[in-house]
Amino acid sequence: MAPTGKSTVNLPTWIWLDKARFKKLSVTASLPGTGLSAITTAEPVSLHIEPGTADAQTYPASGECAINEDGSIGAPYAKGKADQTPPCDVSYLRSSGSDGPYPLRATVTWKISWTSTNGEGGDLPDGTFGTTQDVTVQEIQSVNR
Image (cartoon, rainbow, N blue to C red):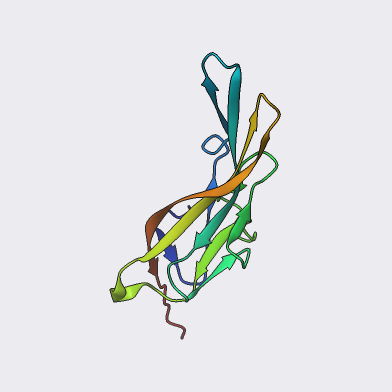
């Protein structure tokens, strides 16, 4: 998230996940003496953003940020990108003020499936895992003369 832990009213807060952190994972379980084994695979498919207040907008509007072709989600902010629309962001419309920071929730959804050595397999319910980060939203004011 950029900026980290803070934001400014009406400016996008860029959100991303590096591809190195969320990769397709597989685990194998075997039943000794039977020749049977099963492989369960979990693959990240999206990141859902909940800004922690109704006074915010997400992009995309659904709050669902898709996985990029390289396995990353969103894109990190870099100098020179200020005029670009982030692929995954939240823009707060009011400062957090005296109410304290907004609890931004980010949840990764994993598609889970399994296959076995006897040819059976299928999809399992999606897995969702998330975390919450407090975001202080400041307001910038200026005087025009």
